[in-house]
Length: 295
Image (cartoon, rainbow, N blue to C red; front, top):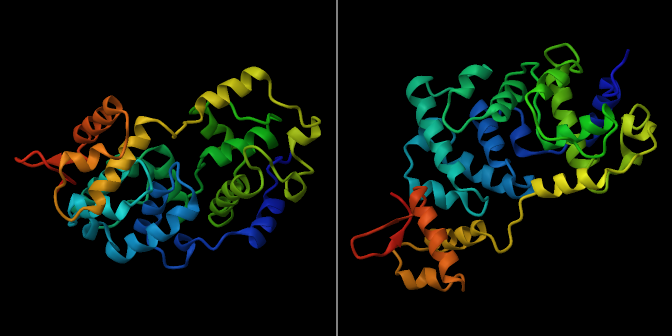
């Protein structure tokens, strides 16, 4: 029986709809792909693209990034969020430079052994750069699969079982399979979106299980679970951490505590956010009690 994730229709659509993302340019290295995937975690592509371009000009190879200071790396990370990713990427670069000849490994297991590289990123690099026909699952792919194959508007909680389920739908071939995986992700990002999918534009409309079931709406329980999984930002410690990091990134010398105190009115939350930055190695202080990025 043919798959509801019809490869021919999906790839024909992708040939026309593919976004010209900078890391998709011919000649992009495996390192460039790895950096793009780390940057894109929980961050919109539109914000990632200019940061990625800047990083690749500064640090075109793992060895280049490994030689940079932590402060340089954190400043270059800018407002991408979750700045610990930047330091983990520097650790990853050092490992690649020291133990893999300054070349990003091409197999999933070795990629998984690198600092800060999880299941998704390892598979994305192996698939998108090295052309390995392995399943790659992010939130976009999970959503498309849930609707097209399972007939559910919202995907269930993530599980390792998903890899095997998606693998059964991958078309064979060193060229078709990896491109199919990229197209599936693109479909989730552009058409099969979380709240208002553009079903009339979807190449899988005729085979989509959710459409064939009459577009059933999610239950109240499914909505509750989905809402719980969405991480809010406004008013959280994460927002306060970001405001403090903005101060430290903008400063060319250590700053007094007063420069940090003005970014947030709640003193207890502000102190908690600052303490967590110090604990995570994202901030430091000198003998005079002034704060700065780690060296």
